[in-house]
Amino acid sequence: MTETPSRLVSPEAHDDSLLPFAVEPLDLRGRLVRLGPTVNAILTHYDYPEPVARLLGEALALATLLGSILESHGRFQLQTRSDGPVDMLVVDYDAPGKLRGFARYDAARVAEFEAAGARAQPAMLFGRGHLALTIEREADAARYQGVVPLEGESLAEAAHIYFQQSEQIPSVVRLAVGEVVTSQGRVWRAGGLLLQYLPAHGAHIRDLPGGDAPYDINDDEDDVDDAWSEGRALAETLADHELIDPDLSGERLLYRLFHERGVTVFPERALEEFCRCTNARIEGLLRSFTPQERADMIGDDGRIGVTCEFCATHRSFDPAVFDPKETNG
Image (cartoon, rainbow, N blue to C red; front, side, top):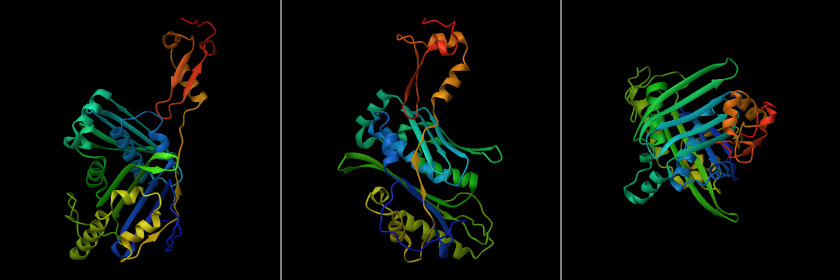
């Protein structure tokens, strides 16, 4: 990391932030994300059923953890396509910290899921399909994509599969979403932790707990296994309520987890909701259609209405703007 590290523990909780950290004695690197007003805004653009909102909140936290590898420029997208009640999730992360996202779902099937009660597992909302992770780097116009199957896995489990198959980095992902009561009423919060074993000396690992890929050993195998086993065990002690606690700062949370070994934190990154839709962008999109296609879009009010799937902003256009010859139907 290029940031200047700090070993100070901040007592103040900062919402909508990503905090990189390192546990150097165990060769661990990680990122902690805490989402408050940003996730609440995105989850309340539409009247999502509670299970769908939780799933989208997890996707927002995961996309931030993975997309934050882009430090200043570029775009990361997380997208699911599947045959379950929630057949699509899309989250965009624009570096250095802009988020947007939406979920597409079948209301009747989601209601059946909710009626199943304790028998219903969150991963059942996906069914079978795939998770696609796409990175677009503006500097070199390069585009990279990784795809992993969704076959009953949660988003965190699918991320583990991605790291095992694509990155071959031993990793732990923890995600949590929930509502908390504030003076303004109930609001959504989300949090996530990504912990990875990344030896500074470049050692490779074989058959570590939780990993399936074969690795070569360049280091003492017992030391490597012990380091990762300890780090993973510490991460597993993290409770969901700690990830979304509005009164617990990220630095204090990391200190709780790793104080015996010592944890170094780096400057946090601010996060915010931001949608790329604008009048000019939507107008440009409409101009790409033929006059007949635009005519078919005209509503009863004689105008073309477009609602952004991400931010739910509705825009209305006069057909004459595109072609004075176009009529109201």
